[in-house]
Length: 260
Image 1 (cartoon, rainbow, N blue to C red):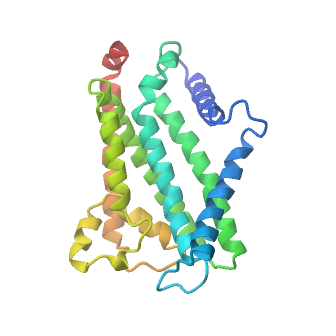
Image 2: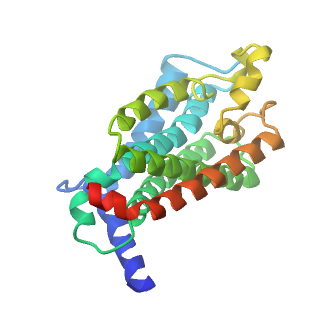
């Protein structure tokens, strides 16, 4: 099949993924913007204004709400990509039987769709930060978007690994949910590293997505825990897992189709 046809099928699968969630609704795609505004409103207003939670080293009213949003929005993307990828071959079985394209196009369409949704939420958040009068370094915005892309690729890669092996061991999908819940709490998303005893820092630094979230939070507060070697470690980990996952799906494609 030609490259152009494959690209058209990938676009079709991506748009299908985006439309599925709100298919049959009047507002359709607009719901992504509406939900983005609702999420950001909850994080910034509810947690900062009503619950009056503030960060110790940032004294403006919405500091904790923005800190929370800068962590939770990327996490939602990461976990959503990973879990959807983990189930992709079972949920897309009817399409796999009809469309003569490589299996990795199905998880790739999920990656594109979820990253598009993330960008909508993230740019809405940037607008809110600007509206509140906070200054953001443009270089840090680009750096955070690069970190977001690699975080998405990591979720994509892990999801593929789970999807491939869960063809043979279905329990892996449930185990992935448990691991994600634990992973959430060992990543500084809803708390800052300042509350962690220094002797435990090295454990957090082993987390392959730690540096990404420190980059996100650095948009509004300077992180003393963000080190270049940790950023390199996270980026290299993502690339290695991505290579392994793509090679695995290519090697086991015929077996996966047989088991489905």
